[in-house]
Length: 364
Image (cartoon, rainbow, N blue to C red; front, side, top):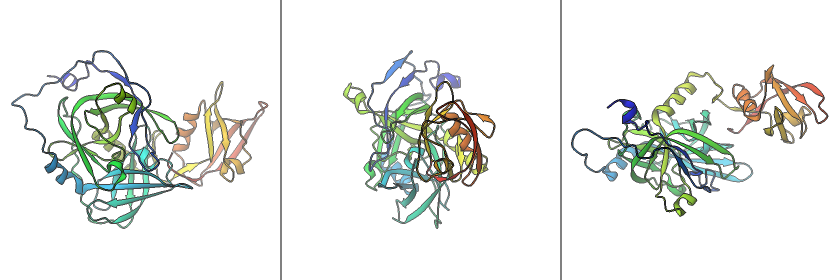
C-alpha cells in the first residue's frame, strides 16, 4: 500500500470546526460554538498488516510519558493568571515544547516540573502562531527527564494513542485514550480570549475526550513516544449535535520542524525568534489596502511617534503592507529596539513617513 493511501489522503475531508483549544484559568484557548461541516468522501480507511495489536496499556504508557511533561502557567497583566497548559521536555536543561496559544499575550510564563514540583521561570525562545507551536527555555533547570520523540510519519488510521496533559489546570496529568480517526484534518479554531480565528492544517484527529489544560501536552503512541502536540478539542456545539468527542494534535514532525527553525536563530514570515517586538497598536484590514490602526495604545511606540486611531499603515521599510497580517509578518522578523520606517495614510488621505522604535511586547 503506498504512503498516500495508508495515510488516508485519497479521501481527504476538509473539516470546518470551531474547537476548544485548551488553556484554562480564564479559558484562554479555543471554544467551540459552531457546527462542523464535512465535505467529500469520509469513508477512507487504512489497514494494518499482521495480527491485531493488543489494547494500549494506558497506565503503563502514562508512567513512561508523564515524567517528561510540565505544567505551564501564563500571566497576563493586569489580570494575573491568563492560562494554564502543558508542555513537553525536549532537553534536560529545560527546552520545552508547547502550544503557541498557551503563551499567547503572556507577560510572564512559569513552568512546574510534574515529577518534583519545582517551579522555573520561562522565556519564550520562539513560536509559529500559524502552526500553534512554541519553544520555551527554563531558567535554572538541569537534569529534567526528557521525552522520547517519535515520528508522525508512520501513523495509521485506527492506531491507539494516548493524550496526556494538565486537564483542568489542576496540576496533575490526566490521560485519555482513543484511536486516530484522521491524519490530515483541517480545522478553524476560535480563540475565546480575543475571538480571533485560526486555520490549522493537517492535524491528527483522535476519538478522545481531551480537556482544557491539555494543550501543549503529549499525544503518545503505545510505546510512550510523542507523536503529536495536543492543540484542540471539538466544541460544545458538535457534542450537542450528537457527535462524539474529538481531540486534535499537531504532528510531531511538524512541531519539530518549527523547533529546528527556532534553534537555527533565523526567523521567517511565520516563525518568530526571541522577544516579541511591538508597535503597540491594534489593527484590522483597511480598504482598499493597508493595516488600519484601530487603537494606538497610550504610552507605546506608535502612540509616542504620533500615530493616531483611524490612520492606515501602507508600508514598512519599503515593503508594501496590503493588510494587517502582512504587517504582523513584517514585524515578525524584528526585535525590540529596532527602528522601522512606516508609511502612513491619515484620515484625509495625506501621506507621511514615520520612524518608530519598537519595544518588547507579549507573544503575538
